[in-house]
Image (cartoon, rainbow over all chains, first blue to last red; front, side, top):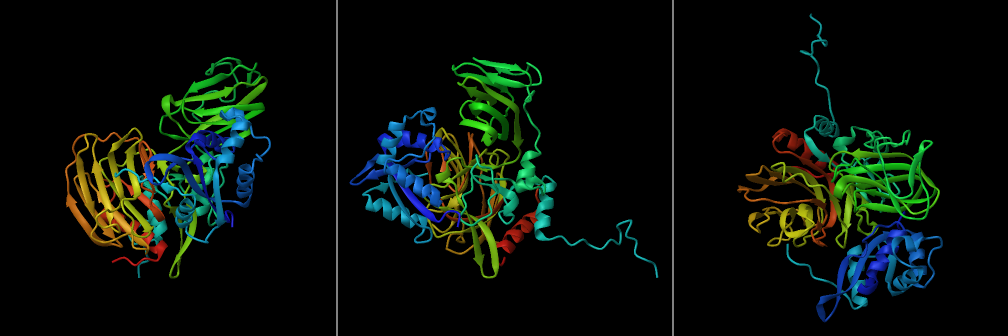
Length: 127
Length: 395
């Protein structure tokens, strides 16, 4: 399978811009972390942004290493408006959970992981 | 006995055409606004736009969905490569046609940047809202490539191969801050039709191979967390739409299957999705800029009940009709009034000032059409085509 993993990632608001810039530097787009989360009991204040995605083995290893402080080599972070130190800090603040695809539905994995982290998806305004 | 005269056509035997061919012919006649046939995977949609490869494997993410009605039987790669280039003097054969910002010069058949001060090489050639396949050759360092002022990819080099939608002002910018970088063979080729894009990897839906009894079909799957595809709106503005699609998902409240919206306002909306009163129903909702609801109706037959269904929506601009698996599921009339200022077409979720209302489930081969140019029989052909893909029996 091309994407044998399903991953859930979240980042505190203070690091979201830098982590999105890191995502762009890695060629994954500019606004992957845009799903607002709250930390109960406060259901109004956005504390984190999240995303989920199918992931290759390579991406999973890259992300886990980055969380531990080892960034991929040769990425021109500063060209994307973030220093290497800021990238290390942003990845270091990132919450990450990976499980084999098909273990649960992506939605179940996402919701259960947020619950373990003490977070909830912010309830959206009505259409 | 007189022989049959095949040359006049009078006694010509009827030519058998498969449902796929019949739907394709509708497209070739220009009668279909857009057709996304997921059954034809190798030629229809590409994954991550910067990668540009065709999707073919289960669980692969999908970043670009091409309009089958526009590609005329070609493969996606051949179709994109065959589009005409809107750039003038992209080969830099003369020192003309380009606006040379700081450091840029044109000489010897290439454009070269000198010095470490950032500068733009530019030309106004794009149509805002159109999607372009961009190629160029960059040597000696990196450049940033823009399609309008706000949509860009940074630090590209070598044989550049991108797909971007043109935004504000429609200008091409090639931006560089490195001494000695050379650019050549610049082309921006428009990809016509309503093509849906997602440039953030985490928000891309997933290609899935599904079965329903003996039928095996291809679907675009959304987990309902953050998947979204967007394009340029056209359906409400053309006065109405016919949309025929396959869907499979559980009951869910107020989620988007297709919508047209504004990225600057939460008010105006042309929405097709799941219901609120009945979360398994199909909902059609239209609200104008003045926050006046023009239509809010739900189908009488569920579309989101965990089983695959063929869904038909016919909106003529003054009346609507729903069919589920070919059977009547609601109809009525309404009046359009006021203005809907719309700038985003959405599939699987809703992009307004923020993104929301993610649908969880499968979407199968949606076809959009203008209700004023397709016949009732042609709509039935679309339904039969999708039903055959999914192994659904029509009423």
